Length: 227
Image 1 (cartoon, rainbow, N blue to C red):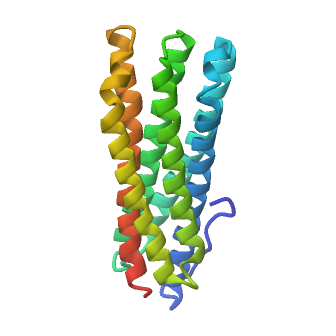
Image 2: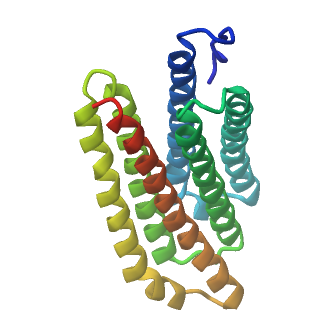
Image 3: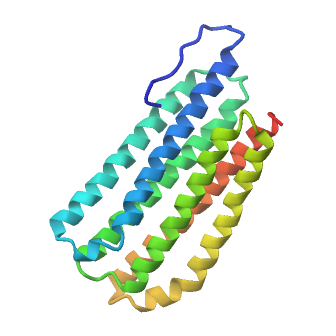
């Protein structure tokens, strides 16, 4: 969270509420940065093939910088959670959400690194470029839905729950596309190393989608206490 955490005194009656505000703000900021990370990947995916190796490296660095910023948010959030009293229920709810969102961060950056490597070697097939971009677009949709749910949760908790259920539908769509197109994309790989990298690129994106779904499930449980 850019503004840091709100301090509270031990034993303060508003302790739990302040902790919730801090942690929800952190999740909101993580989602914003994850969307930025994935927008960078989505926009640049079809462009890398025409870039110089130096320009590709520049984009990779830009994505990595966002990744490191998200990791910093995760680290500070976990330190904060460790200081909270053990009886606060949000410790068991928000911790897994934050860790799963950071897993999304790691998986997407790792996928893009491999994708960029194939493009630098001019070995990324057209079907890989198309499928990668389409899957990243669906991951972006998942993150946008999650972000919207956070924005409306206080005033419309039931509607927020409905929004979060859309993430399941998007995950199913990603899973279907991944399974349907994987063999075709692998078949176009130029050699064994390319096939391995291709499998990891698409597999990481599918795994990231699963992590978003699981994070949303945890947040649904939290919202059920608000309905």
